[in-house]
Length: 215
Image (tube, rainbow, N blue to C red):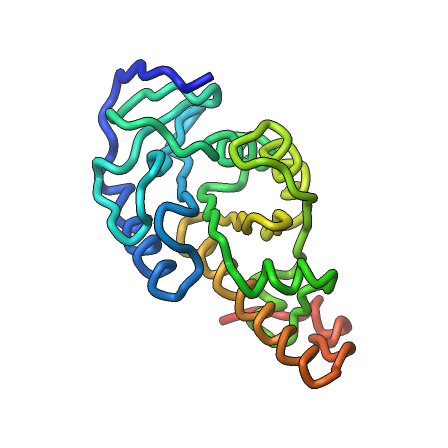
């Protein structure tokens, strides 16, 4: 059933700004194409700013966002939310600390996963920003199964890889969530290169993880 539009508010333009920048950057890096992927931030109790259905992430404007509640009802804006609104709202419900969700279609990450290989965290940045990658089986886009499995997976990971589909990265703000998405894809690219030369062991030294930090 399509979400109903019961707008009783205004889309906060200031909260769209960073997501607009991230969307354009993600497309420029090849992390998503055309109208794939979607972005969101938590606005408050049961209110989430999310990209609308059919929007191209490198062409976003304020009119390409709407505010939904946990049931997908549109509370501000005139467009309908992305078909993945459940993925976003249920992730927020699962993690009270999450303030932003970045869902992209990173090709290297999906390639390594399709090969049946784990993405290895090799550099300090990979280890610090990604830490752990959770994985879900394939589920149809926009489905309850996809949203529920991703929400369960994010309980103990900030990066979730959804087989044959994409990634969902979370953070305390859009920048931190997107930084994780970038490092996840870079880790996948490095993993693929290592596999190409026959290396199956190189990874960030696990004993160094507890003291890892960025100034």
